[in-house]
Length: 241
Length: 241
Image: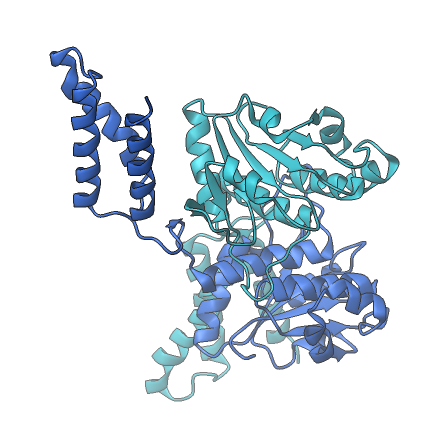
């Protein structure tokens, strides 16, 4: 897929971790995997099991004998690392990096993201090859991540950018949020009943009590179905004795 | 810690996964862990090993015999779930949820986030108990996560909000970005040398060539140290023969 960054695992050690990284990629809709000198067979039973239905990514993975060969056809490369290095580089947060990559891709600039081996992370020389660094903002006292977790966090930011999901939404399923007339009718019904049964005994307090009661229901953004439910509840209470 | 949400694992199955969730919490600076009916001992050797130096969180974890007891003293509860339920609830993305939690905490509203057991996720009744739902935006065709990965993504958003790290920064270590005079002096030096050795042969092309050359270095935001390195390089080239 040319509209995505390449996820490049440099010298990954365990096939299982490559599989878990593939799973994390699939979670995030990323499909381009490159492996530089993987120590174990990335198509082994263990790897496929760990990928949990993402074996398609493992089968399509491209294998390279060196990092320089793995990035030959790319135009910009980011190195993800948890440790600060003694290098003068631009450091991006994960979200800023994927925004940059997204902008680049739209100008035909192919991008790759490097992840180092499990135990040590990327070597300094591998970081030096990159144009910029991705540092995932985490607790500085405890920032070590699994390989697949690092891939997951960067991939998550990528997917977030693509999906642009609404920040919050009331999911109403088969019913709709009630319009203001429907809500007002319910309020009027309830307040008339409460007038009749003496709930608003003290006249000067009535307006305030009505407002308070309305606020309770207004904060819930009632659906049409819920309004019907409430009519049922009120009527049952009214006819109780 | 009262300025943080409570991470509540409901009926977690494997001690190892509880340990990994604690590790993810530590990665993100979250320390309040509650466990509802864990099936295994959360202080077992396996759990502590999986927590990878986050055993402090396991030792301080509070254990409850029911979800309703685990949320008794809280004011707002979010249920994180990957599956849509047939319920009328507000659904937040992970980042919007932690923003809401952050706002709530500043008004003294204590918040909890529920995570279900590994195999099945939260039961409908557990989701119903919550005020709102967190749905992490992921590939809809492949959105199943490990327990610890779900904790990690929500925790990551929490830490991101707290840390507010600069989106991108040039890390210059012990040197500083060169001021404009220092850069101009280097340009003048280089261009004078290039005039003398005949690099700018065609007079009418000179201004454009100078601009192009300056642009190369200006995009790099050179540091003082790097300017000195370049002076060294230029002088060596000049004196080569």
